[in-house]
Length: 360
Image (tube, rainbow, N blue to C red):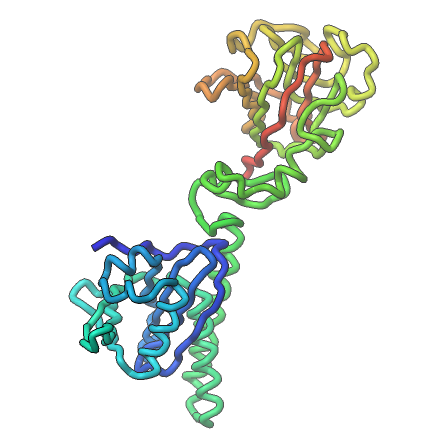
C-alpha cells in the first residue's frame, strides 16, 4: 500500500471542510482541496494533549487502498461519502500498536456487500495548531454554556490557548511565506521568507517584481551606470546573470551619485565603489588590484556578490572561493550600500536575479 503524504502547510486552497466536535473523545476536521487532495485531521478532545493525527491523500492513492473506492470518480465524492458514513455512525476510531490512529469505515459495494476500509492517520505533536486552537476555543465555550463552575479548568484552557497562539505567531515569523517550511529559508530585502524549493519554483514572484530591481525599476540595464533600487543589507547575497559580457563590471557603491556620471568609458570612477572588472578588482582609494582570480566571464555566466561581516566576495558560477576583500567598518555601518553595474559598452547587459538578506 502506498503511504499517505504527511501534512505540511501549503497554499493548496481548501474548497470545502467539515468539523466534528462530538465524535466521542475525538475532534475531526475533513476537507478537500483544489489540487484534489483529501485531508483528515484529528485530536483527542478528552486528553487535550496536543497530539494530532492526520492524513493527506489524493484519488489515486485512495483507489490503491481499496478497489471499492473506484465507484467514486472525484475527491469530492469521497469527501461526501466519508461525511455520510460519519453521520450514519458507520465508522470507528482506535489507536494501533504504532500509536497512530486508525479511522475505519463500513462501506457497501455495488453488490450490497459490506467492507471494512481503514485509513491510518499519522501521529504528530501539534501538527496543526490552528485546528487545536479551534478545539480549545470550543471546549471553553462548552464549559461556559453548560454553566460549569470549574473556573480553574477554563483558566487552564485559556492559558494553553495563549501558548498555542504564541507558537503560531513565532512559526509564521520564521517560515516560508508560500509553503510554511521552516528549513532552507532565504530572506528577501523586504523581509519576506521563502524556502529554496519555492524559490526554484518561482513562488517568490512578488519579490522578483518589486525587490530584485535596479534604479530603473527593471531587472536589466538601461543605462551605463545602474545601481540597485533599494539599499543593501549589511550582510547580503546578490546574483547577477550575464546576458552579454562586453566590458561590464559588477560590485557595490556607497555613493549613489555615480548614476549621474556622463563618461561611461571612464576606467577608474572617482566614487566610493568596489567592483570586479574583466580581470582585476577596483578599490576606489587603492585603484586596480590583482586580488580575485575569477577567470574569464562569458555570456550566460552567473556572478554572486556577497558580503558577510564586512568581507566582500565574488563567486563565479557558484564555484566555492574563500577569497574575500575586507571593507572598512565605518562604510558598512555608516553609509547606505547599493549594488552597482557599470557597462562600458552599450551591447553589454545582465539580469539581477535576486538580493537576499543574510542577517539574522
